[in-house]
Each structure stands twice: as structure tokens, then as C-alpha cells.
Length: 223
Image (tube, rainbow, N blue to C red; front, side, top):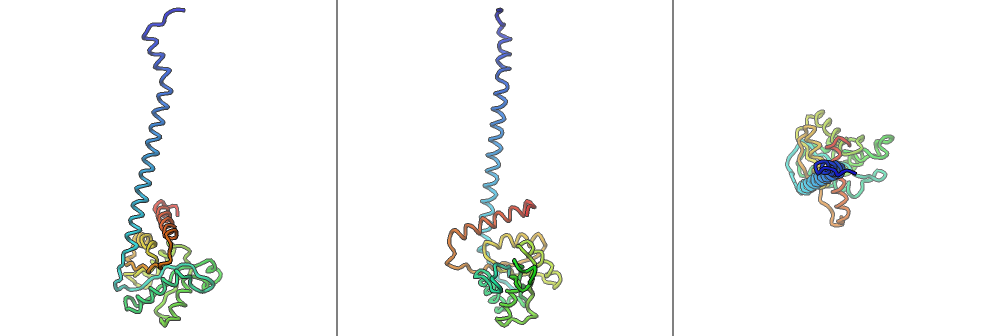
């Protein structure tokens, strides 16, 4: 068996190392990409958390053309505690003379077959019961989520020549509402309802997660 010249041995050793070396490089590149993606996701959701939190404390209780209440659950024609708190806050703003018109938004599980079984209709009934004239109320009863409610609110504003809307909802909901309205060219002021002391940390965390996920999906055009 002949001795192999050193140059040939070096070339063979280099050829043997190439596959393993390439796999190592690819693994490092993949790890770097995964790390970068995680950092981007962390930065995005941290920024979003801060924005939602800061907006939840933003109070812009100024005169407007209308007050719009975003819906929440209703039970057989009666408002849930969350919806009731929003309606009471909107009624207080109306009685303070901040706007001459109340807009109650939201469909519901039974609204397709019975518009009266909707968040918007429950809101209208609440206002009527508390002495607001029917001509001062607009009830939207077909929307099924926040995006649809904003679409319908935009249409109502254009039909009635409303330039500024004072929005009522929960604090954690306000950032997404504002951004959706901006995308529609609708000028809104924010007036979050007071959160009850009985709301626990777990429920607050769930609200933040819901808003962060919903806003992210909307921005990605997946919702």
C-alpha cells in the first residue's frame, strides 16, 4: 500500500469535514433565526401590552356629536354586569350634556332571528327606561364582534354626519377600538367605564391576552 502524499491527505480530511461543518453552520443560522423571531415577538407583545395599559387609563371626556357604547353580553334581554356598567357610564355622560345622541352597538347569539335579543337592543331599552327620548337613540343590532361594530359605527357616523364620537367600553378594550376607528377614518374620544373592585387579576390578565391576540390577528389580516 503506497503512502499518500500529505497534500492528498489534507484534501481528504477537508472533504470529510465539509458535511459536518455545513450542518453546524446551518444549525447556528437556524438557532439565530429562532432567537431573533422570539426577540421580535417579545418586543411586539411588550409594546402592545404597554399601549393597551396606557390607553386604558386615557380619559377624553369632552363634548362630541354622539356617545357610542360597545356591547357586551346580554341575558334574555337583560344586560350583563359588564354591559350594565357601560350603559350607566354612557347615560351619565349623556346627562352631563356631552353629546345629544346615544348609539348602542352589538348583535348577539340570537340577534339573527330576533333583533330584540341583541346587545344593541338591550342598550336602547336601557336608555328608554331611564328617560332618554327614542329620537336620541340609535341601536345597531347586527354586528358580531368589535371589528363589525366599528364598521357599523362608521356607517352610522357618515349617515348622520357625526364628526366626533365619544366611545364607552372597558379600559383594556379602548386601544383596539381606537386603532380600528383610525383605520376607518373615524375620530373618536375615549371614556372607559370604571372597573369594579371585584375584578380579579386573572380576569384582567385574560382581557389583556384577548386584546393582544385580537389586535395582532387584525394587523396580520387574519381576523
